[in-house]
Structures are given as structure tokens and as C-alpha cells.
Image 1 (cartoon, rainbow over the protein chains, first blue to last red):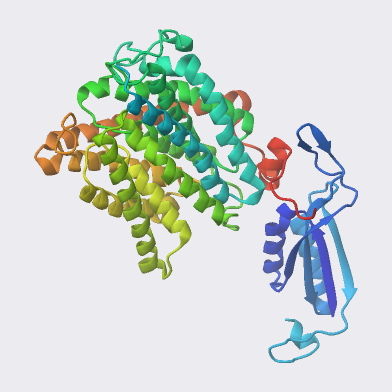
Image 2: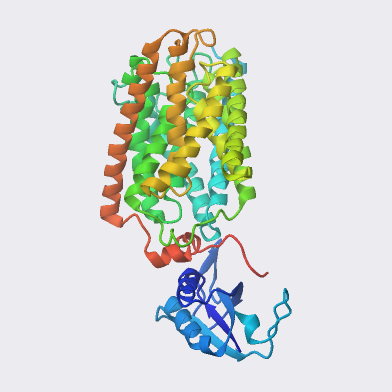
Length: 113
Length: 409
């Protein structure tokens, strides 16, 4: 079992979701986060005071998958989120030790899907 | 002879009508996604600035100077000749400038209503030019036709107490035209945009309802019985329509919503606008109850059927509600309410209904054609629509370098 964490552009969320659904991956958690990568902040100006290096709004996806779904998940996220410009985001894949479905108390791979 | 009571009431009414534009800003601002809320507020606020100036320089003259039946002309350019004595053709008991500033508030809110149709995807620079041209070549002439001394629709006998035709049908048709030619927002089918702040919508509705007393009761241009009648029917129609929309939703969707009550109340206010000085309170209830049904159908059935993206239903509420109000005036108007008005169909005068129908038709055609032309002109020179990435990022950051809400701090 793996946990796929992706940081993407907020406006790409819909496309990523769509790509994931196409591949049958429809269990995910989405949160709004702030972060800073290589991309420069968007300029904001308040009464003439410029703010550049602001933290940028990003979307963080968390998707727990069984091994055979790892590659399709990565592909789907890339297809949905890639523009080729800095700021497209990152994907992290982590080992997942355990997964429990609270309703049934099932554990492991069966609890993921 | 200046009457101090009349003057006080018209000045207060002017302030009430002005407040409707920021009210509208919150009404619309709550409905858009949060990445675009400032763009909507900005569009409303900048209209207050730009059109206040346009009105004083040329707008009032084009609209109200007694030119010919079609065009006021520039005789009152820069308010030259618009003084502090009454001008009897419009209002005999208040200073001419009080009438002028009251009308200024109508000229401000009308183009602001159109924002609801093109919200979330129009370039700010293009919006500015479009609005200025629209106010000058659509609003000002139409205003002259219906309200100006010698205006040809006025001479035809059209009844429009507070601006059902000039304000609501006019803005509503312009809304439909811009929504169609501008095209749908991207990703609309996959991702139905939900209003980002419903309490703002309620706040906006409250401010609109409050300000509308100035809009309608102020249109009596005097502190008299007619103003009271307009005040009473305005409140009554808004109440009936707000309730009616909620009941329709309850029956059809299983639950009444606050968004529905707000939409209904505004639709009721729109519908009673042309009728406010000509109908009684029971007629106002009928007008209010029915307008929600018409607007509900326009918004939930007709819009999806044709697929135009009238983002915040400027056409569905203001044009449909406005047309119903103009026609209802032809049905329910009564000389018992206003002896200088006319009787409608239900009071034995079917001709009035036909006059109202003709006025609606003329407004729809004129506004649609000229709006389309202005749109194409601005589009040709600077482009009306933002590109797809800008739209996705939101207009607040891309057009104004600001955002409404922070996440941390």
C-alpha cells in the first residue's frame, strides 16, 4: 500500500479529478495549503505596497492506493496538472503501513478501495 | 416653488438608491467564486465613480435636456443651465439639481446590473470602455425616450413609474446579449460554480430592498400620498415574491433556500418598479407572487435549455421580472391610485396593455442591437474576454493584484 501526496495548482484540481476518475480512482482527500517552491509568488499590491514572495495557494491531494494503482494515479495527476511551467507542483509516494476502514474494522488492502 | 419636505425626501431617496449599487455588489459578490469576489465589487464601485462623472458631464443632458423625441442633446453639458430652481417639466417643487442627482443614481445602478451576466470572465479594461459606451448610447437615449421631456415613448403613453423599462428590461437584455456573445465560463459543465458567500447575498438583498424604497417611493419626486403608495406596494411585492420563490422551491426541490428567498425578493422589487405609482397593494401581491414563478422558470428551465451562461441571472431576474412588471402595469394600473396615470386592462382599458407591450418590444430590440454593436466594437480593439489561465486563476489576482481572503495571517 502506498500513500500518494500531490501538491498541484488550485485551478488544475478539476482536471486532475477528472483524470483520476477516468482511471477508476475516486477516493481522495483534498485540502487547501500554502507553499513555496521554485515558482515566484504572484504580485499583490495594497495601497501601493508591493508584496511579492508570498506563499502561494496550492491544493494538496492525498490518495491511498494498492500497489497496482500507484502508476495510474501518478499518470492521472500528471495528465491533469502538467502545464510545463514552474509551479505545476510535485508528487510524493510514501509507504503506507496500515489502513483501517472504521465502519467495518477491515484492515489492509481490502480497506483501501 | 421649492417645497422643503419634497426636497428632503428626494435627497434621502437619492442616497438610498446610491446604496443599492454597493448592495448589488454584495448580492453579486456573494454569488461568485471567492477568486472573483473583488472583481465584482470593483466593477460596481468603479461604475459609481465613472458614471457619476459621465452623468454630470454629458449623461444628464443626453437624457433629460429637451432636445427632440429621440435625443436630449448637449444643451446641458456639464450641468450648464441645470440650477437650483425647480424645472417644472420634471419636478416643480424641488431644485433641478435634486432631480438630476436622483436620476444619477439610476444611471449608475443600471449598467451595474449587467455585471451579473458577464461576471468571472471579462477583462477589466474592456469592461470599463464597454460600460461607458453602453451608458452613453443605450441608457441615455432610452432614458430620454421614456422619461425625457418630449421623449417619443413618453408621448405614446407608456407607463414606467420608476424604471422597469429604462433600468431593468434594458439592463436585462444587455445582460443576455453579453452572456451569449462572451460565451460560457470554462469548465462549467464539470464544475458547477457555487456561491462562495451566501451571507453576502443576504446582506446585498437587504441593502437592495432598503434602497429600493428610495428607487420607487422617491420616484414620486415629492413627499406625498403617491410616494406612500409606491412605498407600500414595493414592500408588499417584495414580500410576496420572496415567499413565493421559497414555496416553489419547497414544492419542486423539497427544501426552501435562503438563496431562493433573496432571488424572489429582488425579482419582486424588479417587477413592482414600473407599477409602483399605478397599482394598489392587492395587485402588488399578485405581481409579486407571479414574478417568482416566471423568473424561476427562466433561471432553472430556459437558461439550461439554451445554454447561455448568464452567470448570476441578470437576464433571468431583471429582464424577465422587468417585462412582467411592465406588462402587469398595463393590466393592474388604476386611476384610483394615480389620477395622472392610466387604467390598465383589468380596469377597462385594454389599450394600455398594448402600449406597454409595444414599449417592451421597442426596448428589447433597440438595446439588443446597440449592445451587440458596442460589444463587437470593444472586442475588436482590446478583446472582451480574459484568457483561459487568467480565468482559472481568478480575476482578483490577475486584474487587480489583490485577493479577498487570506489563508494564514
